[in-house]
Length: 116
Image (cartoon, rainbow, N blue to C red; front, side):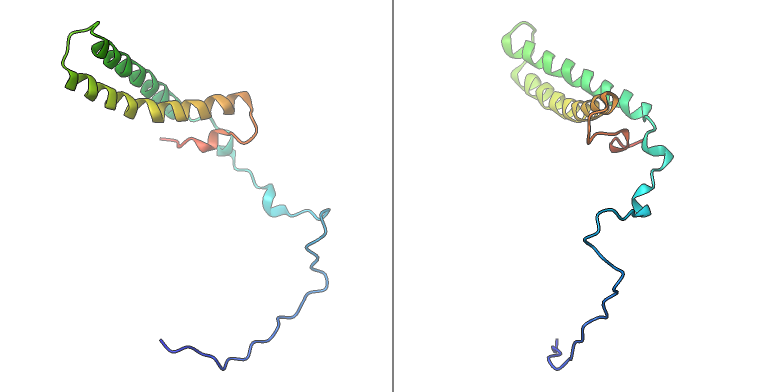
């Protein structure tokens, strides 16, 4: 690919009214807040709670098999442990976001949870 080394660049004209240092200027672009921004995604929250409870149950069952309180093979315990982590992690993550959004913690809102 050939480079163009002989191109003459010129400065763009500067607008005298455009002052980036003025902090008191109001920019209406950042005022837009859709109605769905504060809508609570109930289906997603119920799914997150279901995954959290299912993950806790599977992790508890795997611990019972590991400690010998329940009958089962070691391979069953490892599979329950893996499935428990796979169910627990997204359930905990979305439940935490929903809880902090409900509490009104800064930086958390219901728009961060995907709606199904």
